[in-house]
Image 1 (cartoon, one colour):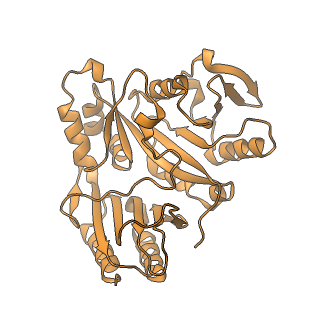
Image 2: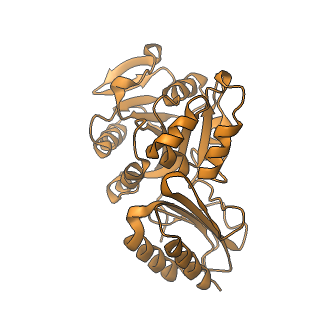
Length: 324
């Protein structure tokens, strides 16, 4: 159960069509606040990375004036990450400490996260980092009410960035709708000069985004288009073998309806907190949080798409019952 060492986090930048992902990314590059970062864009021809940012091209990988590198995913995300990894190892491109993956506006985030938690990606020393969703203050209400992908993008986000606030004086309704979909997600208003700290908080290089639980611990929330989220705080120490069995069994039976599972676990006999997360049927290897344990509880978060309440409740109850 040893953690992966020296792995590079991949932050996912998602959000519906026209919600301002590229504008936000350009602002971050101009700010100079990012660590050395590789930018991966899955539809390069549709993205306006300003020409002024580009210094040169090395076999499909662009060197940006911000000190970052950029490449396009033409068809295969795994192949693009492998290409970046090999160029980095061979010294063909500058080293980087993080990757930001900008998805297409119509992307279902589930398969993307599943790819990023695969064995192949882990063997290249990558790991899933924070998921950031842009939400358009002007058109976000319509997108969330009409497009299931937009709801999923907000539902799995670790942080929501509210864009185009200068065009809409009152953001209360769209914020309320986002809160209905993802009750405790931080919502940050974007600015003309975004910084890495403002957009990612301290999560870009952290080992796992903070696991939040929802008000009225143990209850679930129904959302638009069948999206539901569940949270549980479990007191006492858990046994790893029992946890792994329960989680794998739950994902095996319900994986098609699980958008994201995250947990920070207090495991018996381990001083550090253990981070665990999964997407659909895939369970990512556990990671020890180097900061150590600060509390004697476990926190579990679950986002489902038409997931049966009874299945989620039974799973969380079984986890809780295994604590001692």
